[in-house]
Structure formats: structure tokens, C-alpha cells
Length: 535
Picture: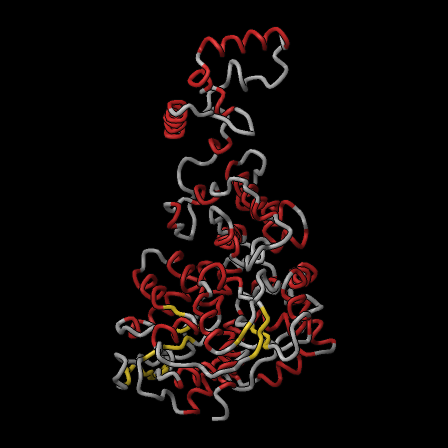
């Protein structure tokens, strides 16, 4: 506050020295009225006071604004926030570790309140669906501010008002890039949920979809995918299971793959090729729900002259190396331990569990981090979690930053590690949507160049598909989820030219397209693999 006062005074002197005005179209207000004697002079301001006293003797009109002003640093709204950093889980590196400072980023510009997204922007899908201020990034930031101030929202982290406002936040991360001051509401929501449910029973969806990697891993080990698919498809058992699991009744439960990606990998005999080593991250969605994406990526990466390996597991041996060597590395014998980015735990605010999963993944990736091999992540949301959530939840573990720096998207690894490779000429128009996490965290410049090289023409829409991981599956969210899809994605698909390829790198986006439009979206890796022809 003292720096604010000094800055305001020095700025006023600079403006006056150049013959400028301290105020523009919005008037002087409380922030500049105290400075007016510097511009008009004390005698002129004294005349203002006499005119005010003549026409408003009881000082009813704008008291303390122009004449006899309140100090410019009085009555500041942020002065009531905690002076010491709040004890939180994320590191908030851009705000000095201070959650209060992170919340103060919002200055009310209200770009999040736009009813249409220019270009390929994302923010803020829930506000565009409901039109309610509390569902805008600004409204949620304001409620978090009131929670920290403790004057209007008095329940702190237990506040039902803040919980209800954040409930319809899709955690799309669009505000992280589209907001002029980079408010990151997805992180704030995860932080809040962690504290709100600490020591309390959580919503059922947190135990079902939040622990999705555990349940899918169990189903894969027990080889019960056909049974699960049959029970979850239709009928009274499926309806009861969805009700108990906190899943929207309107939703169809995605089908589990009969053969996981890792099992296919072992059956094919592991790595092939002799080029630069790249480590392909088997995320939960690729591993259990869409292994065709992983198989396609392996084929394309190897066609580009790269040698693909999977991360180590704690089940036996894994192949790593310096880019040429194929010497296996022995690992401790254990079971069931695979790498995971922790995304589902982060999005549901189970941050202790997320950290445990992340640390286990860092332990498994230790041999990889001793090499220079990049880590290719096919699912954009998982790549974004490794790039941002991992180092921000484990700021004191140097391995987290090292792994985050290694993470590349499918297009990025081809561009950087196979620059001379020419993709197959697909020569088709494309429609679809840039994944919201890719837009916000990863960027899509490499994807655009790869699509252009392959003859894939057309622009992808912005916005968010509305499914957003667990959000669209959670009971009570279906209508908002569908409205978000209708904002940009579904109209773009309906207006697509004949023969257009529907691109959707995210599993959530593909699922939303299938369930709401009956359209099969494909990962860019699948499109390029098909362009290579028959194996």
C-alpha cells in the first residue's frame, strides 16, 4: 500500500510535468482526487471546495471524492486480506507462494464475461452456458477474495457459497491463458476442494472418477473388461451403478478396451527402430480406454525414425538408454506401479493423493531423467498436468521440474526430433477443437505446422468440449456440459464439409462428440497412421 501511494504520487508529477491530465473519461474518483492540487494548484482546488459548499452544504453528493478527498490509499478493498500467506498446497510460483496474491490477480476486467470467444479462445465456458456472474472467472475470484477476507463469507474453506460457485468450473484452464492477468481458476478450484473436504466425506464422483486410474488398473489386471462393459452399458444395473457413483444418468459409461496399450506393447515385443530414443507416456486414457491412439502414435513415431520405449514399471524390467543403447535396466520387483500424472486426483482436489502418485511416477522415471530422452504425452490434459501441476505441487522436488521440462506433445516431438521427416499426404479438410488444456498450457503451433505438412486444411474451433474429464460425467452437470459443447464444437462439426476429418486429441473431446453428436473424433496420430497405409 505504501508503494502504491509513492507510485501514484510520482506518476502524477510525471503526468503534470508533461502538461497531461491525471484523469480520463472515468473522472477523478477516490484514486486521484487527493492528487488534484498537483494538477490544478491549491488555489483552484480551494475554489472547487467553495462551489461544492455553496451548492451542496450538507455534503450529500459524492462525499470525499473531489474536494476534501479521502486519502488515495484509504478504503482499499484488498486491505482486509490476510497479511501473511495462507497455508496452501500448490506452490503458486508466479505469486511468491501466496494464495491471497493469486486471488488478487483478478482486477475485474471481465473478459471472462464475453458471450462469444474470439478466435480460438476458451474462457469462460461455464459463464457462457449460465450467464451467471458467480460462474465467471471474475465472480469466482471475487468469492474466493471474500472467503479470505472473512467479512461476508465467514466459513472459510468450508464455505458452501464458494463450493457452489466452483462446482460448475470445468477446470478447462482457459483463464490461465485468456485472462489478461492469467487467473488460474482450475488450480484455485483444486486448492479449495482439497481444504473444503479435508477430513470429510466427499461426493461419490470423487471416489469413482477421481480414483479412475485405480479402478481401471484393477479391471485390467483382473481381465474383466467385457464383464464391466456389459454391466455398465444399459439396464437397471447400469442405472444403479451410475446413481451410486455420482454419474449423470444421461451419460453412457465409456467402454474399457479388451487389450490395454501396455499389453499390446508387450505382445508386439517392445521397442523397435534405431533412431533417437523417445519415451511414450502411457496415460490412463490411452492405456485403458483408447489404446488405438497409443498404437497409432508408436507407428508414426517409428516411421519418423524414432525409437519408442515406455516408462519403467515396478513389475520387472524396462528398456531405457542414451538414445542408441538397448541395454535393459533392472528395477525392483513389485506389482501394480505405473506412471501417472495424477490429473484425476488434482481435478477433484485430492492433492495429498495426487502428490503421492506424482512422487511414485518420479521414482519410476528416475532412469529416464538420467538420459536426454523426451517424454511424449498423447493426452493433452495429462501433458498439461505434468507441465504445470507436477512442479507446482512438488516445488521442492527438483525432479518435478526436470520431468516437466521433458514433456512434449506428439507434434512437438516430431518437429524437434524428426525434423527431416515428411508426414503422409492426407489431403483432407479437418474440423474439431483444440483441446482447452493444450490451448491454455501447451500451445498448438507445432500441431498446426504438422497438419499443414500433411495436407490437413481448415481451422479447429476454440472453446471447451464441455465434458472436461470428470465434469460432464458428474451428476447435475449434464445440461451445462451439453451447452458448452453447443457453444462452438458441435456447430463446427455439423457444418463440416463432406469427407472432413474430425480431430480431437483429448479423450474427453472424443467421448463428448460420440455421445452428443454420434461422431467419431480421432487423434492426430491416428489420422497420420492411417495415411501411412497398411503395415
